[in-house]
Length: 176
View: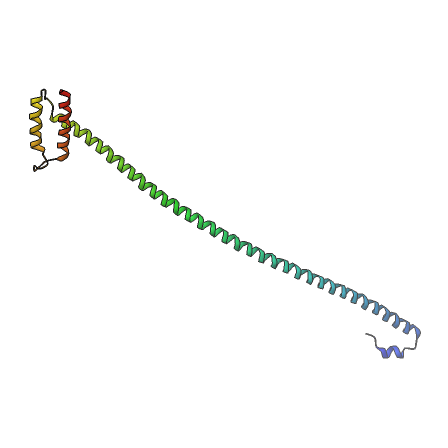
């Protein structure tokens, strides 16, 4: 710091010159520091503006990303619902198919049993008329079988009587 009273008291030109020189140097130094300070201040202001722009850009990107993520989640949920409905429908179709398959198997089994019963029934009717060689014996066996298996009897069987009738008619036609 310059003591101005000393400068005023200085009588020597050398002292004044050295004080002026120091004052000039100090002024230049202060101007340089001010320029550096202003440059630093300008740099900080520019960085602050740049930082705000970057923050705004990042915020905008974040908002856009959240929006995109939300839309993707909604789309995923819709796809998942479609898949779940599809799997439910497939499971229902599989159950229906299994039921239909079981019904067909049951029907096939019952048809096979009916065919076997029919074949067995025809065999039974043939066995009942086995050994018959003439029409008199055929008629006698027919009447005896009807007495035994007639549906009005205690142990009668209508199906067996029908088979007996068919076998009797078949054999009778063969004799003619």
